[in-house]
Image (cartoon, rainbow, N blue to C red; front, side, top):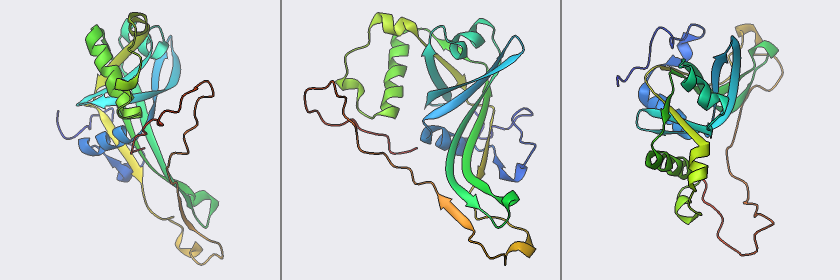
Length: 215
């Protein structure tokens, strides 16, 4: 795959100064995020479905019930989907209401999904996904059943058509507003995990699950 993800479809029209098509930057954002939104159409109606995702190599994966729209739909009737992954990094508070903004990193991907059907490969992908959500947890769990494997659909697209957009800077005000008597700046979003909350049905004291470092 080329290091550039730019195509006529992925080329950013609005705010191109905030755009990038660098593969490594896109992969970094995809790996850091835990949730994406999958956009697709059915009978002329647009649907957007939030879901968790993971990546292996040049492929972007997600899962759902095997009959769910965002898994089954684009397989039954092959179509290009649009997926967005976003990370909110901070609030940008300016001196004018119209210059308020946010600092963020996002990736928008395009591709025609393909179904992962082979049983062993599906299970391997389940493990990769769970390892992203809670590193090392897979080996401690009750093995997945054949019914669970069959009921869960896994699809993927190749990461070859995408764009990155980002903002990471102070407020940008009109020159005449810089002396306006109000605080302006950035309030970072500090990401951290809270204290683990044990299932009330658990009657043994086990170590809490691991959490991913990046998000």
